[in-house]
Each structure stands twice: as structure tokens, then as C-alpha cells.
Image (cartoon, helix red, strand yellow):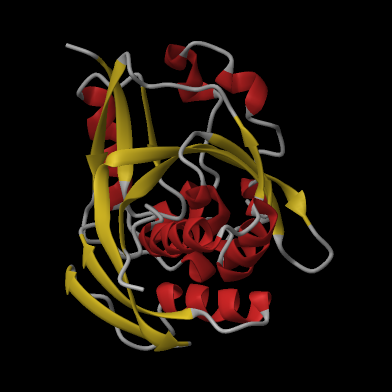
Length: 259
């Protein structure tokens, strides 16, 4: 078998991120609109090798910190365990452009894209891929698809949502201010929670979102990096209809009218 599979791994942006409550196990209940941002992406190439149950990973581009198991390795291992049978050996080449720890979902996109490619190769049911993706990380299931999704619960409950920014320009800021998702959520007090669903707000004109649609994680990230407050204000001063932080940060974006 000498098949080679290739696909871009797009970044994502969060349109709103409201905390609605918390489960008894301590996980937060959230609602956010996840939107692909294909202008920024990693390159993923997968070559099927002779043999079984081996993944060789070759990386280039932005350096990924060493330490934890790479999401690509986790995805391959969980897929093998989930199927209960050997997987074809593969060589994965990943060229990274998406900044690390910026709230853009780079690692999740890599894992979701690998699962999607292998799922297509092996003709696997989408339900299995979604279950495995959710075990890797809350953003990973979103990257199995190629459309905006309303994410609820811990972020893995996904509903396709009709949404387009084609009539607007999206400007992305990626300052070198890495934010740890675990640290941000640990600092999230109940007084920071919006507690209201975002879907009714999304139906309103974008020009009305500023006062009603929030990313509740900004309360914590902005305390750690006050310069993010300055950058968000700069987006509004430049004419953004709506500006927000992505995920737990530290990237931000502004939605502008097309000039």
C-alpha cells in the first residue's frame, strides 16, 4: 500500500464563549460558535508505509515544545485501541504555521484532520471518529468537519450552524503571549460567567454583539496579560464591528466591514 493523503489543518475562531454553569465533576458548561479560519493552517501529509502499528512523525515550521505526547500520536494510538485491530504504519509530515497556545486550535486541528483522513481511508463510521476525537480534547471533534458548529457542554456537543463571514474581513492578531487553557479555566470565577446562551445573540446584527456577546475567559487572560486589553481596544478603534479573544487566548480577532 503506497497511498499518500494530504490536507490542510485550519485554525478556528470562537464567536462568543459563554460559561453557563459547571458540572458536578468540575468541568465548565459552555456555549460557543466554532468557525473555521482557513486563511491560517498547518500542512499535513500522511504516507501509508509497509507494516503495522507504527507512526513516524516529521515536523517543521513553528517549533512545538517537547514534553507531552503529541496530539497526532494520541490520535493514532486511540484509533488503534478503538478499532481493536492493527493500523497501517504511517509517516506523518506536519508543517506548522498556527501559533502554539494561542487559542487557535492548532494541535486539535492536527489530530482531527489525521482522524478524518484515516477514517476516510479505512471507511470508519463518523460516530467512532467523534467519540475518539472527544477523548483527545474538547476542540478536536470540531475539526472532523468543515463548517461552523455551535458547541455546547464541554465543547464536544456539536450542531451545524448556518453562519458566514464572507461579507466581512476578519483580522487576526497573534501576539507572542501563550496562554495555558488549564491555568485560564482554574482562574475562572463564577462571577465571570455570562450564564446566557449565545445563539439568540448570534441571530442579531454583528454591530450589536459588542455589548452582549462575550468570551468569558477574557476575564482571566486579560488579568495575566493586560496588553491584550490594549490590543482589543485597538481593533475597535480601527473600526471593528466586533472584536474578541480566541478560546483561552492569547490571539484576538476583529470583524470589519469589507472595504
